[in-house]
Length: 210
Image: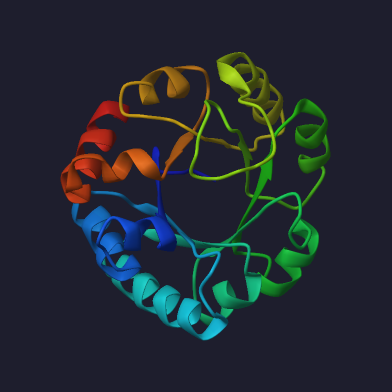
């Protein structure tokens, strides 16, 4: 599959801290040209998350954008999202695909070569590697993997025809280097909120990665 270069993550908790609702933040990213969104909402109730996901999916699909839901395959399917992203401690990628269907996107997080090797045997659409750099947004329990592992992961995933998404501590200053290391898409949470204008920031990221 082909992925947009910017994976704009709508982290519900970070959105509220920055003074945005997740829906309004997603709208800003879409206006800024982002076409690959991920909704991440660790503390929302299932009902709240479904409402937010459904609204974001509706808005995104009007402009041809893709939306995946973090962790919750059930919410992804109910909201008519394009797929789901799961981590090492979530439901397996194979079980997630059973929920969302054969044509949906299924992404899987990895943090080491061992996890990457296992992931590539799963029915996934893309594999994520990270954290690339140190980050305070998401505590994975893993150390930063650096650009060398991004390169190695991109080469290994590429041999299997699986796109690589890089995540973790990536800023507008480092995004191009991560892309040049082989990442098909760059996932960003915190740095898209820098400056208080996420629409302009998404546009600037997209331009930097074009």
